[in-house]
Length: 245
Image (cartoon, rainbow, N blue to C red; front, side, top):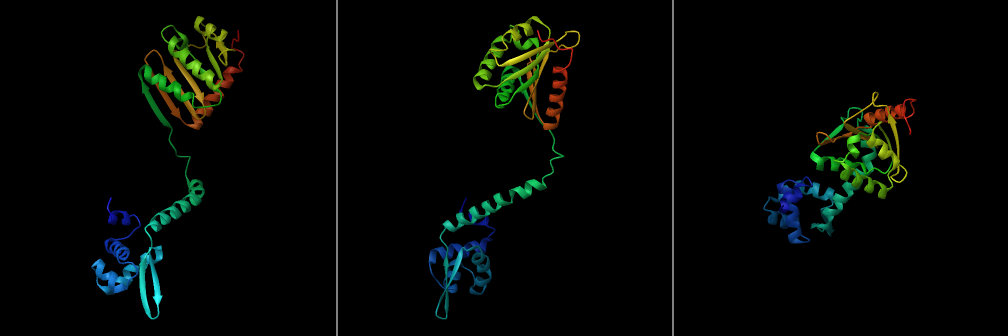
């Protein structure tokens, strides 16, 4: 980016930029000297200098009856931008108050393959609160055992707790036996009432879906959807149909 392109960021046109550049080169000088250096007519100088004076990029000096002009140090450009940035930061709460959050759409992220499911699992570990989920025997099947073990080890090291609901099965029973050591509480539903090939989890304002059978994962980021599914989870968790042991 050349000097003229940089000065354009300050809303200076080509001739205004030429005046500032010429003033930098001439030092303290008269309007005629700067105009000559900038290759503009002297009569145009005063009109062009108005914005530069207002921005503080040009200073006027009186010596007796004569007027001289001097360009501000180039660091003034940084100062101007920093002042604008601070003004924006100060006004940010007002802009946020105007923001229409009601019309925001959920964010949806799709991940394919076993590596995609890994990415979904890794994202859940960024949340430091409790994870709620409807699990599936496939999560702890022989085929997925390495994946689940690695995930559980990472989750334990971070101190992230889980409450999980799954179907009555050999795999979920085996999982439940390790609840205490793996920072988890597992409850089960009769298989005729609930069974699933897909794992669903809620954490923060997100929901994840992991399909171990077809090898893909999905994350939906939306507070309303997440809060609704959390309420459904709690209803099932506290229902009389859950088998704890």
